[in-house]
Image (cartoon, rainbow, N blue to C red; front, side):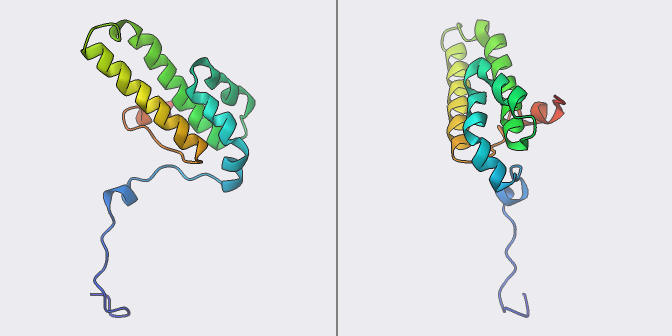
Length: 122
């Protein structure tokens, strides 16, 4: 029990322990629209090449690159009825969620690809 406030200490939730990257508010405000291009196919190249000084835009450009690679490689698998269609839907929904979260100024690390994105040194 915390003697100063007479309250039990609050344990951190898993969401608080595993947090998304934190970026400068000015960087987010200035670059969120360009960063959103990262989730529209090959347009990930725009923030990747034009906004090299923006960590926020670079973060999203790298995720967009990995998603584009998944779309290209998965192109064959996505044609398989039921399983492929389900996988294509999951990737599409994740892509749309990332787009809207970027427009909202968030830096959402996609659970499955976050480790690959962190290893990219572009």
